[in-house]
Length: 243
Image (cartoon, rainbow, N blue to C red; front, side):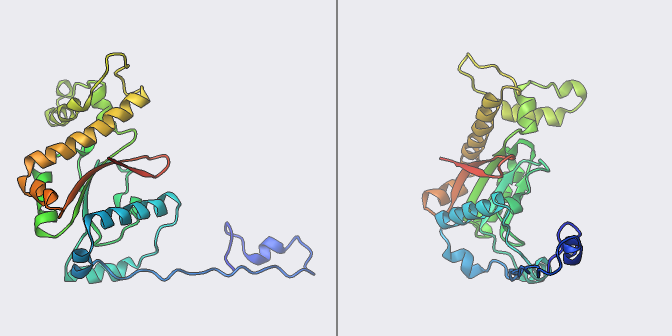
């Protein structure tokens, strides 16, 4: 019998009529997954199939139904090689656990992180390695709700004045995503506007990746790769893919 909140079955029933036999509930243990992605599995999957699997994994995460994995066994098997099916570019935000968000384990995906999930030469080079060299077939740029970097860009934080020139460069890279119709309050406290900028920033990064990498653009044209945008909602746990 599984203990509940630290109480044993005996404790749970000690004040009850002991003439009734407690009903025992059998706990079904899921067999932990110990395998990892293989070259054959990676080669067989299409970009659309991979995106479908990632969406299903996110459904598991949002429902608090993550797959049980034997990470020790996966870690040992991963020493042979890696064949991830996708690369996810995420913000550095600690509240966005990328592998868990898609219900994935060791060796399933590459993860790149930078505040505001924007691209630079190193990030694009990493994407080219993941796709053209290591065989990944999907690149996902994933923003998230309540993004701090986007908030500071919207509020025009002057990082230069605080002696943080590198942060200012990053915020300047986000600012082109701040598009207003003229009647909107340009403030991070305006949640609908902030959400629009977060989505704009994701789409801008997707477009910039295609411009900066003729190799990945060609792979996408040939159907070998898909570069897509998405936004993770921290409250619901759901990832919304942008069309």
